[in-house]
Amino acid sequence: MQLNFDSPKPIYQQMVDEVKKALARGELSPGDKIPSHKERAQMSQVNPNTVQRAYQEMEREGLTETLRGQGTFIRNDPALLQNIRTEMAQAAIRQFIEEMRELGIAPDETERLLRGQLYKEEG
Image 1 (tube, helix red, strand yellow):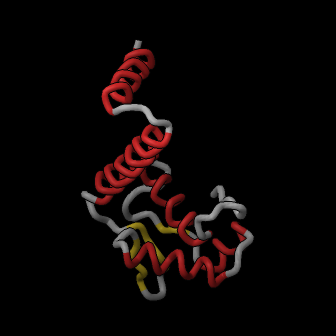
Image 2 (spheres, rainbow, N blue to C red):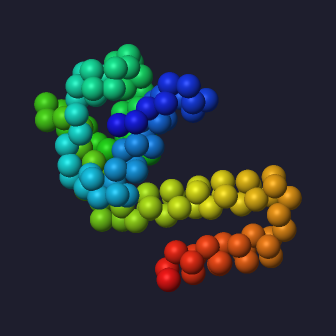
């Protein structure tokens, strides 16, 4: 798990995002058990309270579920993976569009550049 301690994004949110990315990449699957709070804190070298907040956020978002005495698991929901991929793709697109606007690039020019890059990558 790659955490950036200099990022303005809170560590707990970075942890949530890393779990989502691992799901999107297929490194985690619905039903997989994730490390305990203590294990994750030791692995990430962060305060256990930070890990607890990340786990609470993942549960609040419906990403994980905790089974008493068994641990925390990625929710076994068939739609979960597609929802996460869609959410992450939309966030990346919003960020890209915002950056293009900040550069003063018009929507039609943004589209032309994007299409050119897509086709360049394919062929």
